[in-house]
Length: 526
Image 1 (cartoon, rainbow, N blue to C red):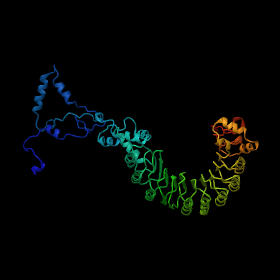
Image 2: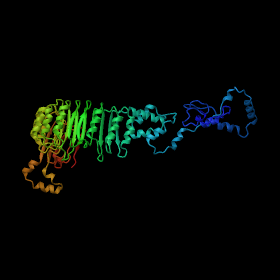
Image 3: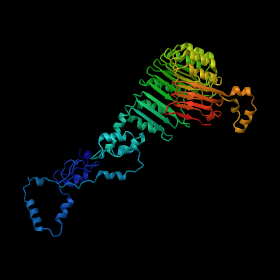
């Protein structure tokens, strides 16, 4: 037993108290006073230090006789006297606050949290109450909050409570940090519900797994990618993530060019936004509670996604759809027919962008199947004024937003008819509809003027048009890029936003505006 315990002193041999003090060398700060033994917090000791006693004894001119007498009197005391049991205490420890000077400034937030965890702080939050400290620290960005945790124990406790109480986190992930910053922050937010990330590096399956493991109760996630970053998530990985997240209701992700397939099953997902999709080979969805979907496809010519199959799958498995947004150059009349066959009774917003194959026949199918639309966006289509007439006949009491930008077959007469027949209209976008064909091929002003003088009067009559709009509820009107417009007359008392960018033939003397609203903004940039 002695060999196992090491060398032990003889039981009769007296051990001085100084040996105990050396062997008990404390690695933590003293919480009690080194002179009287009482707790340090809020304590002012009345006993003198050892240095004061020595100085009082060795001071020249002191009464040595009195001192010697007191020493002899104390020596004659009985061994049972309390003074005989008082041990000589070691000198008091230095203040632990001085230890901060030895810590390198470049230490990370994680290392500082581990190294300073045992330092005492008599007043954790300084002179500020806990509620004030909470309000100050919770306004810091995530990286600033991690740095504040290394100041003192009080601040560290407050930051831990802030992390635990965080329900929404918006974070920018730099290219150098990658998975490290997510692995250090997300585990702290045990109650996180909403996560927004702006990724400057590549977004891969490792980051997605870190999010899935650290945020078990996540309800909303948004992933935005920078121009230099690449989203490497595949369709199988995204499908597994959505299936495992039983609480996820909203998912918005950019740069989904590597999905390859669209296979999603979820009973809780209600909002789904995916952009830059490319060449989806398979589309299988089962989202019974989905209410809003936005699918943006790449504008590359080699995109071979079957949009008719995608629309058919959405119509059969998403009966509660209310908002549909789809942008693709492959949108056609067959895609619209697949949508109308689904008979989505709750559909209120329909946006089909860049579909040059969408014609007036597609408009007729939409009007016959969904007569309660509140927003209709057919920008980039080939509809004419006849299609606008069908829209006005079906949606006079419901339609409040009509967007027909980049529709070259629409004239000013169709725009005026829409403004007159849709009394609930609040937003009208007709950008790049009334264009001057000669201005598209001429960039120099002199060439443009020479071409203008050489144009016959009949052609000028077809190119330049006048627009007269009188509406009581219209709030936003966009005519950007309408270079074929040479006169504008508006009588809209509630209009607050007018966009006339690149209307090069519409001069200040050729427009008459009657708008009584105080906050009225006109954007006119050539």
